[in-house]
Amino acid sequence: MPDNGIRILAEQVLDHLHQSGRRLVTVESCTGGLISAALSDIPGSSEVLEGGFVTYSNALKMSAVGVPEAILSQYGAVSVQTAEAMAAGALVHAMDADLAVSVTGIAGPGGGTDLKPVGTVCFGLALRSGPVITAQCHFKGDRSSIRTQSVQQALRMVLNT
Image (cartoon, rainbow, N blue to C red):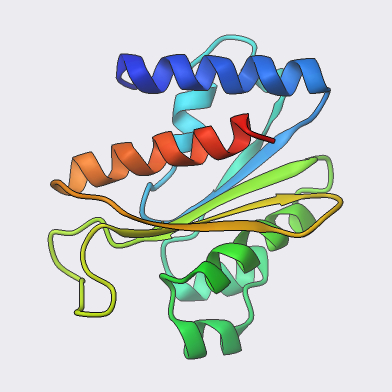
């Protein structure tokens, strides 16, 4: 079960989606399905949650949601370009969804570099009309804290649509 802060955000997101008559799909890497889990933990979420993709590997990012290999090669899995392609691709593959939120990052404790340290997390938010909104954050803390902060950020992005 998500912590209380995430649960409150998830309830707000579900209410927002219900009021706007939209359905959401998630596409997650470093959060490993935590966004979908937070939303689906709440009764009635099926009315607005289409489902989610957990695309941890680059191969699955390409095959499940159509991230171009060229983007992964040029920018890496942890980049706003990849987050953008993940969100846009999720809408292509989840035809009944109206918006998609994506997250890809380095939750640690290893895997960071000087250019992309642990805590670097990129987000994408795609709607059926308009450009994909992207964001990059640099979170502090351990793996669990970085993942929690990532879920919160993704939920806030959906809430602000």
